[in-house]
Image (tube, rainbow, N blue to C red; front, top):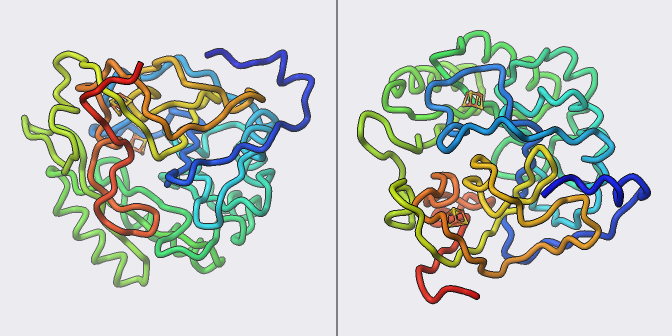
Length: 300
Ligand code: SF4
Ligand code: SF4
């Protein structure tokens, strides 16, 4: 779906967009670009995305500020590396103050500039985990440098913590880094590695066959997440976003309605691990899966 430039250019506001009750996550992919190149990057699990154009600051603010969310459901800015968006600071500071904002980042950004541009309160809320969640990747990062940077953010009053991916090749490094960070008083949590390594599929998934990647089969699927791509497209799932399938809507479409209904999908088998893994919800309760898939009956 292309950007509805004509309808956008004449409008300074759009109708409020209500989130269905079952929605558990708002993922805003400002860009899929990244300044690091981790060998296990899950963004490359499907077809590598290259064709997404970026929405501008004004477009993002028009789209995000129409969301009617709940205090416990933040807008999570992510990517790729979201701080690489050329309007990153203006976007984060322009989001309505009553909307909560979280950030997933590798923190390669200039920390001093970040702290000058964004007040700690913009990224702080009552939650059992930090609002700025920094990913640690041992093959491309030094934990000493990262920890020093995170400490500076903590001392300035930011809600920030580090998450390390338990990739089978780097488990020892992540555990050592965790101990080091804990000794400094930094919240360091681990994240399960999802995907295939050395012929083994890692992760616990709710649907057998969803990741087989042999041939797509037809199912009915409904989501509990609002996923907005760099071009403003609203996607059913991470698999659709990364594979550049046609989005189900556009955040700047005045007629957009967010749905929790089942939709037909012909790509079961090419799902992304993020969509079908067993995980915790936003309350940190285990046993949640982002999508619900029914093999039959198909919807029309
Ligand atoms: S920092 Fe994250 S998005 Fe960037 S390459 Fe590594 S895993 Fe991928
Ligand atoms: S079945 Fe898989 S690919 Fe299809 S919409 Fe659901 S999560 Fe996405």
